[in-house]
Image 1 (spheres, rainbow, N blue to C red):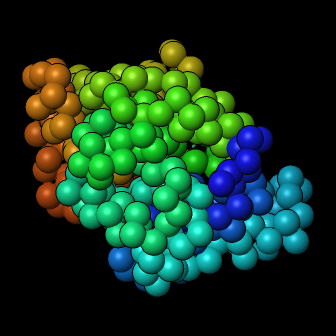
Image 2 (image 1 turned 180 degrees about the vertical axis):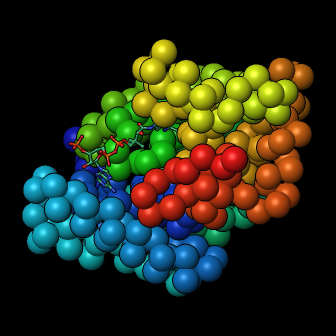
Length: 296
Ligand code: CAA
């Protein structure tokens, strides 16, 4: 059991993509033993290398000691199976692609090995927590723990309460947020929660503007960065989050809420081409070691 101050001794993170590896880092930095699982074990090694490289930059800035960085990386243990990841875990967090059937199968496997009271936290950006909990037969301990990219840097944890989520689970999630240094907001389970709904609509509108020739990607982004003080414009941000991730959210919200979320054709085209943003080196920008470069 996690204790009342929210510290969690053992966490299973299922999915070692951008979000899973960042979430693993957050818990490792807070002192938890993290078991990181991915269907592709090579991705787990890549994730640990990514954490190491990210922390090296923080060390270089003098904000963390090399020993502390090493300890964080060492606290992230690769797991070769969901069973291995979940045994003894007080918290199981999945950060797999936005596919309800996939998330259900990951949690079912985890539930067969994790303690009966383990919290089942999903990092989904838009899928229904209520449906997930109900289909798992574990609504009371299923909750949305929505992190933001990059998880080690972004301050927010959006906690999403399903219809059947127990008050105790919400309280534990709030305490966990505090223990990992995040500020939480509590949101009811509606499609897109509070943040994705607003975030993707801005991104989609920017894409529609780009494809109808309103301005270049760099100028649309600069407009929001300098005119609205967004740290990053909506197209650059889509590259950071992943075009495939944004497309899945838009498709879901179009179905659940309405036509304002229809994915722009340019997004589908880029995803079909495998241009998924920063993680593949190209999206609305070309991503080099120096950062995003405008595509002309
Ligand atoms: N581990 C720990 N700390 C790290 C780190 C790492 N891997 N990488 C960077 N940091 C720290 C740095 O040391 C730095 O700390 P200080 O401020 O104390 O110096 C801080 O984080 C900022 O890092 P940088 O200076 O390298 O970066 P930056 O100032 O250029 O900002 C950014 C980069 C944080 C990504 C910023 O551009 C930003 O906030 N962009 C918007 C991000 C955003 O909106 N994310 C949400 C996306 S939506 C989402 O994720 C939800 C969804 O469901 C899809």
